[in-house]
Amino acid sequence: QLQFVESGGGLVQPGGSLKLSCTAPGFNLDPYAIGWFRQAPGKELMGVLCIERDNQITHYGDSAKGRFTIYRENAKNTVYLQMTSLKPEDTATYYCILDEIRCPAPGHKVDLWGKGTLVTVSS
Image (cartoon, rainbow, N blue to C red; front, side):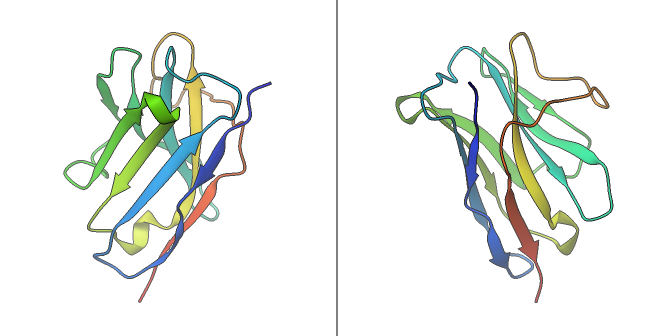
């Protein structure tokens, strides 16, 4: 049974950085596309970045470009989201998603298998 554990969130000032981690105890993430999605209060779940099975990166819009990086560390069965230059509009709960074939297209329904990690960007 897949269960994601997302961690690394917290309170950070605008311009700060955070590194989020996504792992799945007992479940090998290597063969899958893994993405980071986020849901801000009162808003829909939105894609941030996704790493394909061949490690190509899928972007969802321009919000993360130049600021966020996604990468895998297979030895730790973990996918990271490195976030820099954080803005108040990045405030959201961040979730991992998984796809067997490829990163989901924008707007495509995804399943959540973890509780997420809350990122709050505020001074």
